[in-house]
Image (cartoon, rainbow, N blue to C red; front, side):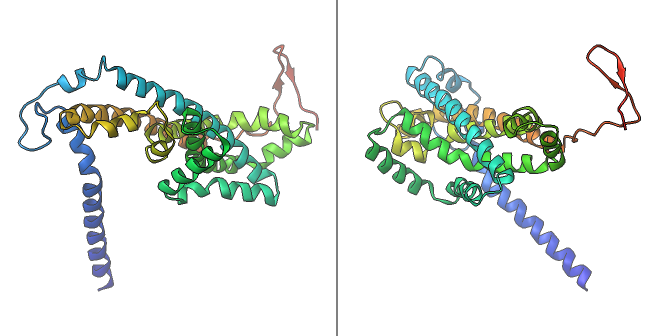
Length: 289
């Protein structure tokens, strides 16, 4: 009886998961479908296949400017968030300080705060310090939003590195900075690239924070939102959304592959004293016991 009940529960769980995935991703899959439809109406039946909506993406100066702003802001924000994530996560694991643990917890806190609250808070802050809505304000806001992701990725990578590697470098006379720069960072390179790519995606797609902090230079999400007010621009927006979706999927998949490769990378094995070691000149040198 218990086996049949378990099998029935697993079947209903599978149905629930499938229904949830369909509800979540079916609207996303409809965007590429309608982007090739030869009609300005996003409705069935489809009127025919066309590429004219993708052709309208080229030569659009407003779109090009918004895209350039998103790329520049995303690259700067991703760099800043990655550097901060590396520093915060490393000090959290190896700093052995209550302050470092507190900073790490605060750095991961924005992921739990609603975006509207974050946007309003940042708007008040930048007005108080005299920046006002601008590109610099957007960069600072995007660093804050992307920081939790970089901290989580880098902390998991640093935690996966055997502590004996760092201890061996310190025992051999290397300073903390040298150990961090020459040992820990090279071992964490796949995770660093993954953190940067995911932080770039978060910055590139962010809308709520940009809505509060943007000045006269909108980013791509703001441009898309402004075009939704015009029904004739809807097919072009769907073509643009399809392009962004494809690029985002490639970047996210690459980042995930790099992250898993970094986590599964084997740790360097200590040298076997019974085996000779080759020097820089090609000579064999035996380890002394």
